[in-house]
Length: 271
Image (cartoon, rainbow, N blue to C red):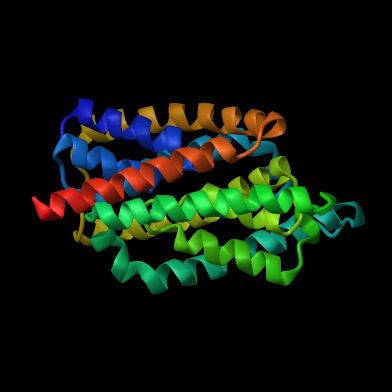
């Protein structure tokens, strides 16, 4: 992998990590277009870059969560409840992702499975918009009941599969529970920080153990910078977008992309 290819993959990762359209699915498509095999180690390295973008963007929220966790001030009670819910989502998401991990790498190499994942994302986004019209939007993230927290967690864990958007799944789950789009998006991003950090930590352990390697200094740096910058811009863009518009455009995009990939995979299998 050269620096140009790494930067292209970094832009794809950063631009799609926070949009509800599946970064893993788009990376898999990019690998196919570039004639490359998926490099899961490099992908997690790109996740570190987007993690840095998330920490930078939500630094005030993270500082408040840490402060509330270590203090017992009554005025921090709501933030502590939010921290407990994020911790619960992280644990259950990690267990879910671990359970399906044997299927992740084979799915990344299958256009049909990636296409199916995009269709799952489309259905979740459309269902979230329909539920939003039928519910009153008054719930806050720190008051989510255990069942809603579990739903967010399981869907976040299942998003390890390519084509299934992590942000799309968790935003949809939050909306099912009564969060408005903006609150659901912020909760989705905050829940994404620890699970991405855990995935990155696991991969660094693999690197130290010699079971996986990065493509080199120049490609790694190019991919990291591209993903971090694109990711920061994508966060700001999505939060601004969900305030004014719905998720239908993303549902339509992932539906069209998923259907197209299934057709292409069917044609390719016959050829």
